[in-house]
Length: 522
Ligand code: SF4
Image (cartoon, rainbow, N blue to C red):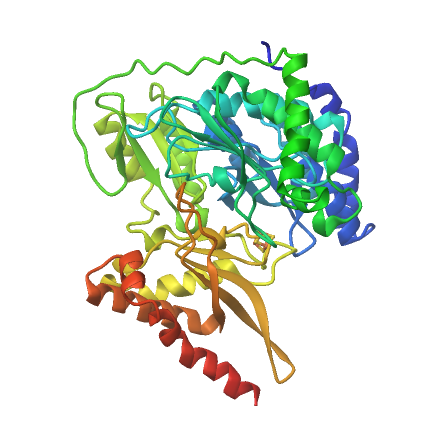
């Protein structure tokens, strides 16, 4: 089938309204809540200062071709953008934009085939995909063509109007489940037999839950029927009036239980299958490039294509130095088959490189993580995000500073995940260690604090949401992590093994810091 494409003229007709409302908001003619409700549809939100906007560039399946990369680099230069963010939703956010710049860039995105529309608000968000799909040796199969087809199909439904709430869809190519496909509103998890298991009604954020398995061994060419069924179930059975219960994870409750939800979905799936016309036959991009030279290292993944490599670039919390990003974009313009794959941990892979090209890419991107801990994740946080309660970015920076010369502890710690509020953009519930922003009121004064989560896991078959392990003052967290890191290093184990062998250790480490809050409160 030919997958329908979004009607760009429909979107273009809405651009003047975006420009006008954004200018009005910056000039304080409309309020914060009203503007937030308006702007999300355009993939743009006002930043905390009320004078600048963020624009979220939809990168379907996390893929950025060299051509799109050149466009993004051109925009960065033209508008002198000094902050961009690789997000856990596999998008790139452009920050600190004037109203005029946000409107102009949005228009130019449409010409470059980038659709920010629907990347916020109650619409299908960016479709996620395992970042190394198609090049990873251990994958069950290449799910990227299906994720891209799903993205195109979902984007084309945007003119149909609002959903009860946003719909996040993910595809995973192996049990690594890097996109948390089994914990999304809708997820397609690859199987060894070349088919998908389909999950839905999962999600992080408030009242997080793991998805329900809706179907097993679905032929990949049939996935659009499941997407159509999910959209219909959500539109017809979800609530548009009770916002606190409007995500798909409340559908089972709204319908009277899991069995009733599955029945509602199955009924719509059957109808979609009977209507037909959505069978897919996508073509994977053929990679004919080959080489023979070798390269190894922490940042290097050897691809299934002989002699080709993927290089990981993980700037702190997904905030690359602009000069590194531009140098990378320029260099890749002349590298055959090279492209970027955004990852849900705020890093990016540069794929299809020969060994010498991989070495050059590493030299162009020195602002990168060097172990699991420095690969940690943090949302943009409360200094930028109007929803934020905690400054995730500064917490991560202070943790890195504390650990800067504590090499053994740093090497022993796992990747940590920080969200500034319950919305969970930092995916704090899936980390072995996670933190969620809050405040502690001590004698009438609010202090920055984070609730700690432990033992989360997104590996398929072992999914666990992190358990709360206490609320700590933000200023104490670097010391808590240092202690944990030292204990793990001394044990010679990794975090999971150390935690399993010492289940009370973290409670013992955090106890004095929680006692401190208690004493200060007296
Ligand atoms: S988790 Fe909260 S603070 Fe962080 S980006 Fe999301 S909404 Fe903003």
